[in-house]
Image 1: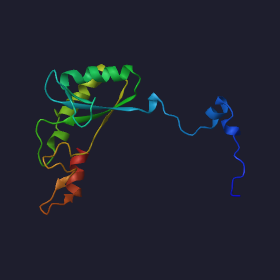
Image 2: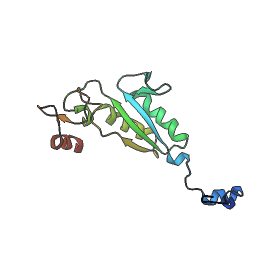
Image 3: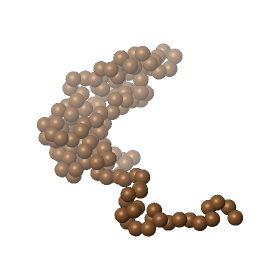
Image 4: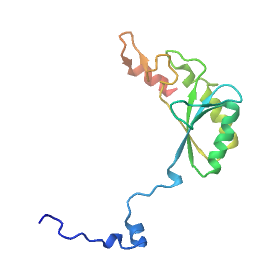
Length: 150
């Protein structure tokens, strides 16, 4: 007969013991709510690849963030949809880029929520890569790091 010959159930005996020895607990404090923002006004556009998820225009993103904060969710990660894309991802570090404007609008309404931004450049480049593409088609790390630092 193989090991184990007996299965002891003492750690599953009652709810108090199970609570004491459980390894993983998930609560609202572990959540980060994704929000997608685009320029414009009075827009709420469903993201076709993610049913029930929407892109909000700048004039409505702060209200959405406030609603998330009132649910007790402690953090938001913001993804921007720029009006135009270019090879150097200039919308990612533009003073009045869509995410930058959204951050200011959200902070004015939702004072306590943690704001996180996506620093990948792919959503801002016209070629869709996460970095600067060199003449040979490869990603150039050093120029990409300079843009990420901005």
